Image (tube, rainbow, N blue to C red):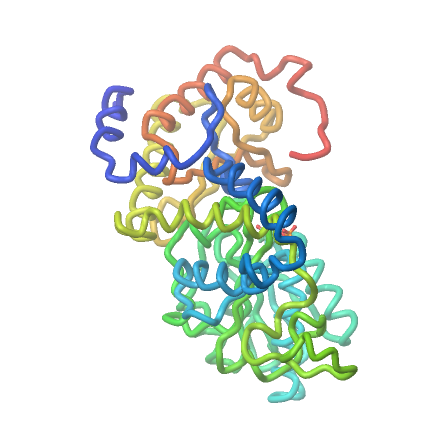
Length: 420
Ligand SMILES: *Cc1c(COP(=O)(O)O)cnc(C)c1O
């Protein structure tokens, strides 16, 4: 049996323990939802206040040049590149994940169409995040193509010479299951298809090597593991072999080769810059920069490799504690045990009361979330930047108490809410 004392000892030895000081976490909260909304970096309020008071208030329009506003998407993109195995100049932080997906999926379909006219199918996973599927569905509808949705174990079989593009999310949001980026990309390439990866639950959470996997396109989210704040700008990457081949469909002036030439005709910028559309939300970008700083602070301590090692230790511990302490209480494990197939979350199933159990945990200060489906999911994200092993122990103990006391059956935990 692992004891709380064992966990406290692990925290004392943890080389990443001081990174927690970079965050402003409320007292009495164990935050297991950084996979949905990363917490506030301590540096952010002051940095954003400076952007408001000085850069906007005093600098006014001059700040586009003097405060580096204009290059922010590229500057942040270069930092994100280091987290996902891309090179400087290949990533921009911009727009939302949904919008970026529309851009790269359009480009990928156009490239596939230009090279292999007859391919009519876009393949994805039925349990992919809905916005990804909706964007794909809309594009397929517009282009007269077929969206083919398969189960995770049916992906390899679904790929054939009719496949134009395979679109997948690297780490599944409901189960935490992780695809083998390199093997799946190779399987798609073997039939001549392109691959678009959504790294929403990977960037800043697991090691990603886009070039090592020879991926084609990728997008990812700024407000989850990158700690960029609610609605933070997302990011987009295109392999240099594709970046210049097509206009993305949202050909706005920020993607123009010379936006301040104000010419009536569009001339796309070289490389990833053409994947920008219009004027960027500078205050949100400023917050995202603070979020990225928290991840880059791990660089001298081993970077993503060290973060991933701790993340796996945290999720291993949570799985073991739930099984030791909460066994026989109707919980199942939806997340793969195998490290190579696990993201940075642990998802539990329960036939009855999953939503109410999550609500009861939140009332105790243990914040995870609920994802409806069959079966319903209790989802817990483990971010190695600020979580302690003792937090994991306490979270499992709260879960045991919520189940054993039956407190989750109370009315207050059984009401529907707009956002789960
Ligand atoms: C979180 C998430 C999104 C979010 O998209 P938005 O455009 O930011 O709303 C998209 N795709 C996946 C896979 C996600 O996990």
